[in-house]
Image (cartoon, rainbow, N blue to C red):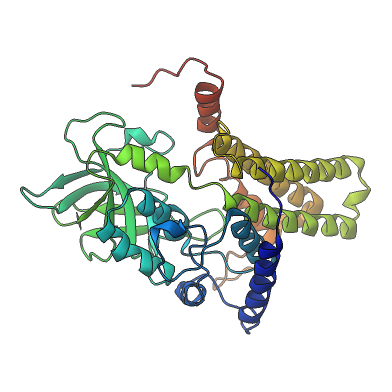
Length: 387
């Protein structure tokens, strides 16, 4: 694929740059949240990658190169992390591919306007990387369309803020592994029926959650892609977790690397040949990741591309965090402010980078699972025995 930016892309770049400059100029700057999502939605910036042939839901649409332009400019501008990522980039394309007209009409306009926030109910205790081992069950009322859900989900990002959850559950009693699963669309506003418990992370934040569903009361009325087809729909959805967002992520990575290089110069660490070698290797690997992402983005048939991408960026980001702490030296163990009973736990940006990056090789499919996927699906090696 000839992945070059044409006049339309350059015009979109200028428009995006101007819009972001105007809307990020406030004091204080906007933060990740519902207000920012509605601001993006009001001017049509949510859903650029949705298939225009499926109809308009109040959003702009752009070719693949235009989507990259927006993602790059958004990252360069230092705009807030997106609260609506799950709905826009994961659920919406899956709705367009597998949803019925009524589901599209109900959910897509609200996502495009930034009015409804979604979370993803996949991982469970004992069924994280091995998702097919999940035990959350959903039983349909006799003769009806309502499912009663029993079980627990784990590491559910933004569940405490979400309006809806797309949830993988076992809807066929006695089914095994990837058989008998369905993808349900579950309203989170069910007091006493759904309980959300935040999980405190190393960084002191709590973006992840445990979610408990009370089988007597927790309910869902929508199944996406048909009952029993959950595994196929869920795998299609997971394949959308990589792509344009990977290129925008790399813009952020480049900014983090540049910050560490400036710090190395200030602290004198850059005089160490070993540190300089690590910096050069990180820079070269980041360039290689960009071209790898562009190649995969322009060719959906590249085998194992999502697994390769996840392996590359997660290990790269961990090495970056380790370099940041080494460049800081002994001061890396100190917080930016004196600790107190009122504020006992505060980190600066590089400390947060180091601590959070320890999870990069675990969430979204662990490094071990990605290697197994490449071995089995790309290299054709014998499959691991599974229960």
